Amino acid sequence: MKKIRRYLFLFIFLWGIMTFQAYGTENNQSIFIQGTVIEILDDHTDTNNYFRYQKVLVTLTDKEYSSMEILINHSINLATLHHLILEEGDKVIVWANGNESNFDNARIYSYSRDSYLLYLVIGFISLVIIIGGKKGFSAIISLGITLGLVFIGFFPMIINGVNPILSALLVCGISAILTLIIIGDFKGKTYAAIIGTLGGISVAIILTYVFGYLTKIQGIGDENVEMLAYIPNSANYNFRDLLYAGIIIGTLGGVMDICMSISSAMDEIHQANKRSTNLNLFLSGMRIGKDILGTMTNTLILAYVGSSINLILVFYTYGLTITQFINSDQIASEIIRAFAGSIGLVFAIPITAVAYLAFRDKNKNHMRI
Image (tube, rainbow, N blue to C red):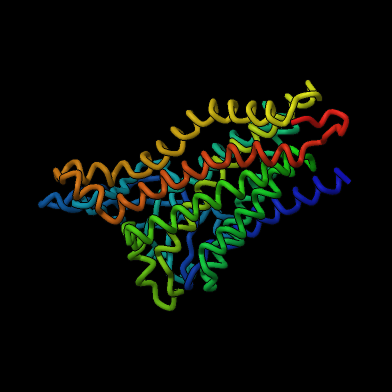
């Protein structure tokens, strides 16, 4: 049974990766091809120093166009922050509209970064499996399932008009159950961690919804929201609900971590001393939770601060007052996101501790309060 379950999870993981890759590189007759800059034939800047022009020879490396060489006239607007300045040996993505007959109008779309990112991901997976062994392998499988649920379940549901909050709750609920069962197997400590995770996330979303309503945040502070708002024939997104959904997903990992740590530690204590009372076990779980809470809260808050560095710098640079700073829609959204998630984390500790008492494997002869 265990082997069947492992192969099933592995199949889901691989299917998720292949489905994600199946989105492809073609869109509206545009093709994106891997290539390498083999020679720079011309490189000069105009007299006003506004534009830099490069004529480059690129060899295409995709199998379909392997070894084909094309000339590309590449212009760089020096007045913008995005400078794609090419050097010989650079791996690039070439954009062309249509087919080979239009390669004369091809452009450099971006640097090719996917291979280096793949090396980083492979390194991460390898280290987790080498150091974690079977547990590490299970962790990678659970991560693959979570990413599959998010990219294959969550986003398509939103695009098809499903409420983002309901989509996030469904995806996070399934992810939490599958992940914790893969890591902890079908045991009392696993069920306790699941209850604690779902409880912590529920508290976080309730607080987010309440304080989002009280502060009247609109969820439109992110510049990407404007891009979504003006996409032709797109779904009529509720940006406030998208913000709430992001908070649910962002909180999931930290809450699962602390819940599994507490329930596993309580289970070790229980297995070492079967005569431990419910009260002693609960207090032990709370003490363990307090130790974890200090660093985990910092992790969540600093993660949100780190993702908002550019935004915070804008407020500092323009010398805005603290009143302007806190009351902006974007900052208020980030504060609610950070602290609602952290409060959910705090509530997950006693919920997990109580749940473990209900789900642990008890010896009826030693059940004492």
